Image 1: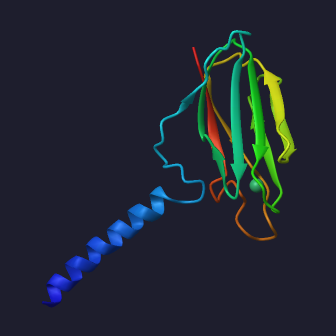
Image 2: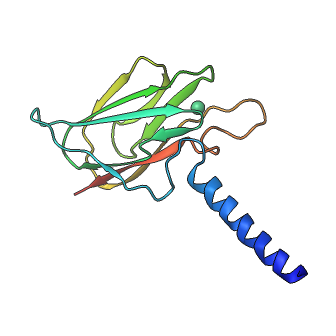
Image 3: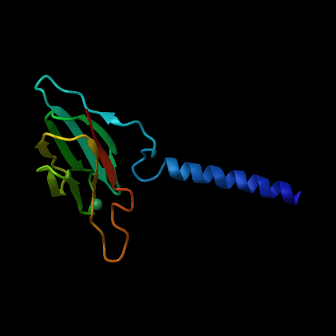
Amino acid sequence: MNVRWICVTAVCLASVAAVAKGAGPGGAAPDAAPSVAAVAADGVQHITIVGGDYYFRPEHVVVKVNTPVALTVSVERGIIPHRFVLKIPGSDVSIDESLGQEPTTFAFTPKAAGKYPFYCPNRLLFFKSHRERGMEGVLEVVE
Ligand SMILES: [Cu+2]
């Protein structure tokens, strides 16, 4: 009976771990399908990202290279201050802005394919940064 009890416990722990992974802050599963930006009638790829404690949604955005991007970022209601950082090496894209509930739009045209992280670098004292707590994503630029 003892052995059986251990087996049941192991299954239980595994399912708890699975739930914790899938329903972490932000709710987005790590393997969530990327959000592919469509080119609107104005020729611009409009993207909206919403942040909170401690996530960005969507956390994986795909855009086309050499096509204008209008990236609108805001945060949901809360008292913890957040920032949005996105830097594309070799380009003039170097965003580091405080975020508010009022959306902020960043306009740029990615010139090179690649995967570029965006994140919130804030941290309180010696605690983990918001990025380390899950507040990060990736902008993927494709040909
Ligand atoms: Cu933050």
